[in-house]
Length: 122
Length: 339
Image (tube, rainbow over all chains, first blue to last red):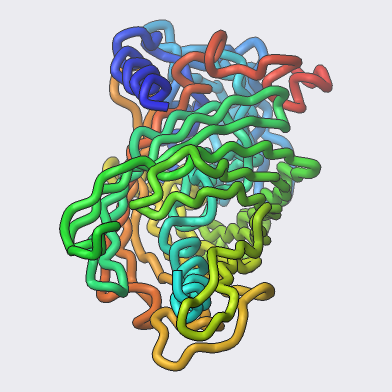
């Protein structure tokens, strides 16, 4: 029994040393425009900041108007300097209104996460 | 053990079951957009690869002893919906009744516990999950002086979790509830310990069958930040939670004993308000949680205690080795080939 606990302790102490740098579920940390926020102006792109690196080839982001109409947008791409950020360029500047963003991403370790949020353009 | 003491054990068994928690509470669970943290009074409803190292509990016992427990637990997924876990607790007790009849300090391991847990159903869209487990506390693997039983006990468990992200009202979406119901019985429910020299009556030691039930109410700022409204950096890692767990002997109890604490048929339990922090430091994914441990009556504890946990998420830290199931894909959607 005591040997078993010693093994657990050793594993825990070794864990921070052996862990890779960027593996985990990718949760949305924040976004621009922000989750639930009201922005002025007409945004031309969405930026989603995740807690982990995201593989854009297996990820999707959709933007809908308040009426449920799909807003034309590019496929998500990573920020060249940071794999935790994905960028979606909008096909047109968004007029005032409330928009819903639904995202589904696959992190670099293949965990999938998803979510929905809205923002308002004043 | 005297007849009166034997009967009082029924209540004590229930109290101990409650205060020690009702299982190896160690796994966090992700269902759809919802993260259910590893809770402390009851186990969360999912299976995962996780190392609980340790969970610390301070319990002021009804008999005026103070108990400090260090719970170690490891859970390993066999498939994405089936896990095996092993746990044990080192107990340090002060002002405790020793075997020689004096009061002093006691140290020792409690019995080894193992558990097999299965998730038959989960619904990502509605953040709903149900699971069941069979748990064994192995007799004679711990130190009797700190309460380790010489006989094995078996517990059948049912769990559920529900996040309210599918509600219309935005302010309600961060809420979630989880629950657990346990039914515990001993493999040695009645033991004849001797004959009373005064009365000639047979002395019986009973280990009652115990029903334990608990629930948590969570308000996830983690969820709020990602899905409803951004919150400041520190707060977006927090999940304020209130837990409650109750335990009662239901059979093989024996007659009531006047003045016994805990009472022979008494319900014991705790209410545990607290908060969890889920974060990362370098490559280490972890959870820190702390709760007050408030006894619901005198039989459940002399006064408030505390419980805290440091938990490592192995599925995040070692996704290609320790953190993945032994067999099959990691997640059901991967198995379905949806990405």
